[in-house]
Image (cartoon, rainbow, N blue to C red; front, top):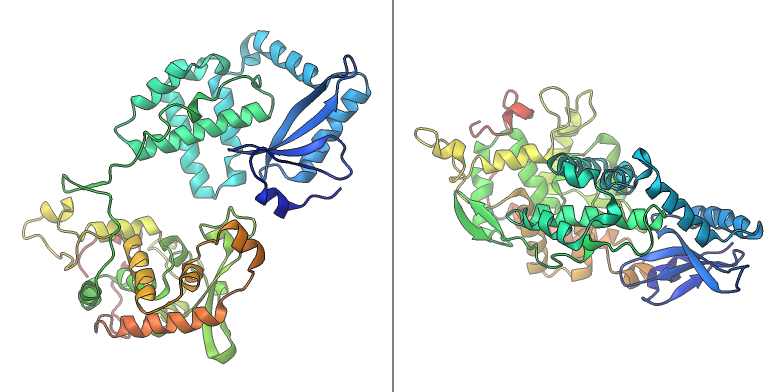
Length: 448
């Protein structure tokens, strides 16, 4: 058996691949998916038929081959796999109780498999969103999935249009649940997947609302003067805030990567440079088969921050540790930053206001965008900048270019560090530790 994964990735809609050594097993490409099918000649009338097995790459070729063998054995025994599957579905729909493929069963079957294709936090969030829907819509949950109409799908999504981004995610989850049920043969092949058709392109984000004022969609990048002001003011932040601010601006990494830093990810390599090697599964590229670990050389204040935290790491092993020994999370830092903004209720509701950031209307992720923009302004080539931030190249480039860009990462992150150092005095070499400053209870504190 031979399967060319590269050819499968490059396959265009309408095309198909046959699998050597598995007669009748093929990978069929449509506009939306690539699906394993068993194509065969019916013994009864000689007509060509096919049965869907599963979707690639969620179903690897080895699993597809095993399913193909089962169907092939059915045909060899004189049965028609397509007719057998149809009969089984009809029997399920006709049987009382558990025999009906309800919306809840379709959703639950899909939800159980989410951890196989998503990181733990993302899978849990999706499972909670789906379960909340089933609890809010008990009538829909008990309904036969085959009987769900286009109007049913429209009504459900339209009622949630006021939160377009969340509803768009829900729409995608339900569409994927129906796709899986169709692939598995739990629903008749002619069952329409209305979730992919209803409100298509009609659930776009309207942007943020801050302090009761709608500000729309923004791609906020801090100007050099704003970076300087923020660095100078950072002495007012607690230690986690100061350190995170530096790592965002000096490394271009994501918050989940920064707060997931552990000693085993840090290695001193040739030339005495300390490299931070972020595991692939901790990055946003974990779902990509060809993704690799993200390597980040550390310079200047970023190096100072990491070395200091490395020398003080607790029993938990996290460089950013909370008061209770748990991992300090990205959401804690986002909340902390928000509560230093002048439009935060913690500031507006406090007599005298308290500490307020000198640079407003930004989130932690804007720091990453700011650092990436600074690289471009320094003359960093685009492909190097994208490698530094850990963005995946397109399929064709990834297929033929396996270069690591380590030398370029070293060169341009050193330049970025020098640029940031020149913008403000900011963080002292050894900031005073704030009691409890790294824990959850400090996530919204706005005084040192």
